[in-house]
Image (cartoon, rainbow, N blue to C red; front, side):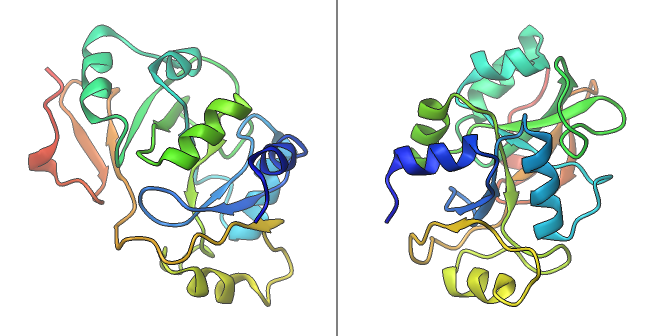
Length: 198
């Protein structure tokens, strides 16, 4: 098993890593690195037009990357850390593939101790997309992940094997840039369990 220091070094070098999260296994990389993000999209076989969200360590880090008003901040504090990705107006530039065409960015604080420590210790915003080929299902089972990528031309640089994760759907994605809360993707958290954006 690689040490945390080695994993952080790999991320800073622009490598793409399969890593466990609080939902499914994820493909993570430095979301500020154009080279790393492009590599991730090649591995995932995903169009750059379809943006990926980003893991952050806390609301303070989120505020560096997105415009967050008081109501939005109250909402974030109720759902984070957790399985809710929140779409907000971006403040800083990110590589293509991270920002949507309309200038929004998806952010999330995961509820996963090892991953949160990785974000904290690296001080990097990390890409947060499920570890699967585009069009294939996301998975909590490490064998499924390895089988999906092992014959592909472009493969993750590292796979962190944490065994099989607890069954979970990917995160629920909500748009906080509109007056009334809008669900963009149904996922692990149901609408009835989400606080209202008042």
